[in-house]
Structures are given as C-alpha cells and as structure tokens.
Length: 310
Image (cartoon, rainbow, N blue to C red):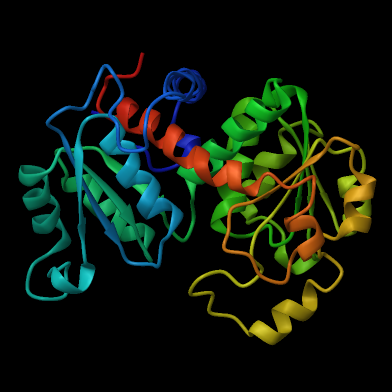
C-alpha cells in the first residue's frame, strides 16, 4: 500500500513510472468513449472514496472519471454529513471506518494535520487532492502535459513561475523540479517568496532554481510560463493589499514576448486577474489540455497506490 501525499516523499523513479503509464493509457483510449473502461480494467470492483473540505471542480470530476475508466467506482462524501472529529467521533475512528468500506481515500482538506491523521490510522491508500501545503496531483499532471506538448524530458526545459511563490502549488512544483532536476525561474514579490525550508532546498540545487523580483528577468527564454490565482481559496490575507503587491506580476502578451516563441502557458485554474484574457485564450495557452490530463495522470496515481503500476 502506497500513499500519494507530497511529491517530495515519492521516489523519482515512481514519479517517472506514473507519467509513463499515463502516456500509454491516454494513447490507448483514443477510440473509447468517456465512460468506457480501459480494456484491462485493472481496478474492477474497487471503490474510491472522495471527500472535499474545499470547493473543487477539476479534481472532483477527474478523479471520478479516473477510477471509472480503470473499471472501478467512486463515492463522494460530504464533510458536513460526517462526524469528522467534530460530532463525537475522532478522525482516527473515521479513518478506520472508511478503511473497511473503501479501497482508497482521496481527501481535499483545509488542514495538513487532518491528512496526516487519516494516513496514520488508515489501512487503505490516502491521496492528497489538495492541502494547504501541497497540490501533488496537479503538479505531476502539469509535468505530464509539458512533456506531452514539448516532446522532451522536463529536465531539458526551462520553466518560469510568475506569482505567489508561497502556496501549495508552488511548494509541490519546487519539490517536483528538485526531483526531476528542472531549471525553474520564479518571479515574485520579496514578501511572497517560497518558505524557508524550500529556500534551503533551492540553495542546494546549484543554480537550477532561481528567484527574481522582476518578471521580465525570470521569463526570458522560458519554454513554459506558469501562474496561479493570486488570492487562493480560503486565503486569509488582506486581499486588497496582496493584489496590489502583484500589480507588476501579471502575465500579459508583453510578458510572453520575453519567453521563447513556442513557449506554452499553463494555469491550474480557477483564474483571476493574474493573467490577461489575450494570454489565457491565446496561442500560447494549453490550459484545456492541462485540465483534461488530470484524468490520465490520476489514473496512474491510483494504480501506483493500489500497487498495480506497470
């Protein structure tokens, strides 16, 4: 049994296997309908339990399709309908109960402690669908998308992140770039740099990961430009002040001119004012392909957790 909680905790060889498996499975589905199962139905008879303590569109639907295409089924649990540590039943007991009903549990949570508590007492794999510190399924899918479009190993490309560098997406992206030895430039205000632990890890990368405070310097000659919503879900900050801090970090057509001519733009969604309409819907943007690929990569993540990865 293997959990999928944080990129940093998963061996690089396993991350590469997940991406490779997703590539093969996507190719083999070209003539299948959305709900048709893969021909090998590797998870036939298995059920994925899902619970969302934060709003979700892509993660919710993509995991439903992922387990369905693998031959299994899913059940979405509403946190307000469970005890979940607030109605007289501990998270430990809830975790043990869910282990008797399901074969894997995907949790999108507002607390990393809850994620760890579920893992501690679970007898089935736990998958992190997003937590305050990490968004591993999204980032691994993004790497898959980049390699699919660029037809190159991620380690041979130059990535640029523009925006808040101290959020769950950025944490997982940095962890992934360290794992895959990727060149990453980060453009962010000084007060929104990566956390201290990641800064320490960045310093050990011998210049592979660099932090800039001007987007034009960071994006120069990049193969991929990425960003995220400035005000994240449940972001408990002075929103007006934070938005003002990022006024010089919007991704617009002028910004994209500093990147390579064939550079692609990615955004995990939902979007806000951090990117212009021209870029988001323009020729560089691959956001819809990026969103669709969540299904394919999450299928392989599920197989990894079930011990059935090729």
